[in-house]
Amino acid sequence: NFGQSNYGAAKMGVVGFMNTLAIEGQKYGIRVNSLAPVAAPRMTEDLMPENMLSLLQPEAVTPAVIFMASEDAPTRQIIAAGAGVFAKVVIQETPGVFLAESDRDAEHVASAWQQISATEGQVELQAGGEQTVKFMTKAAKELGIDLS
Image (tube, rainbow, N blue to C red; front, side, top):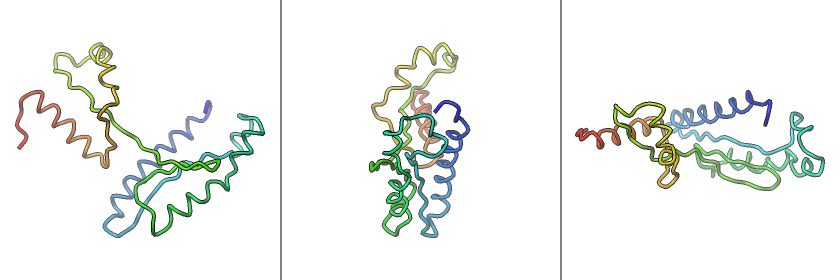
């Protein structure tokens, strides 16, 4: 929402924190998850009419919190909850494109934007290292470099 950039940035920070804690806690059997609540806290009182706000009672988020803290919960998941609706949230990365060194400028990125943002084949990365391996593998293939 407009005027809540600090809130949005903090929420993405929570996702990064969750991902790292889940990796670190795995060997100890500790599961870590994140909640993306859709509720009507005070900071949203002036943003919606009362009939909409009445659907977004904070209590409707509680079942998600209880489940994600239970023994049956998965780990490293983001669950959205609000107004009786529950959904898994994912952050995905497209396959991307390789640009030759001579083409690595803003103009070539702009001209390749449609291919860069194409969602077919996108993946949900499980760790930051996966992105590094993906990028190195893609570049090596394009450049004919054997990484083995």
